[in-house]
Amino acid sequence: MPVIKVLTQEAFDFRVKIIEDSDLSPGKKLDKMGNLYMRCREASVNEQGKLLIPKELSEKAGIAAEGEVVLAGRGLHFEIWSKANHARLLAIADEDEDEDELGIN
Image (cartoon, rainbow, N blue to C red; front, side):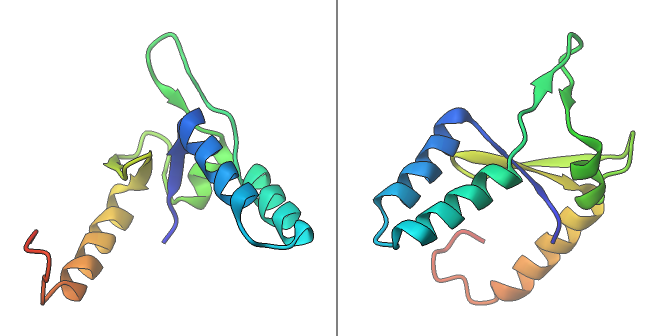
């Protein structure tokens, strides 16, 4: 489902290190690194404290201007979801976790 992943510099650097330390061929490493850089955009926070998201990314994630969003923490990054897509994600996750072996449901 469409989502915006927001990485700190630390999280981005961690992904770069994974690629660099992998057993992939040099060509595959370049491809993976290029793909990572190509998909990332720098973001900023304005003087009102609002995170400014490029329009193309918000449109791809199904987030309408002035629409409601959900921020979901995911360890080293967080995700920005449209409220509708996040609800669908939770419904799918609930279906998949009928047998919760970890005891977290």
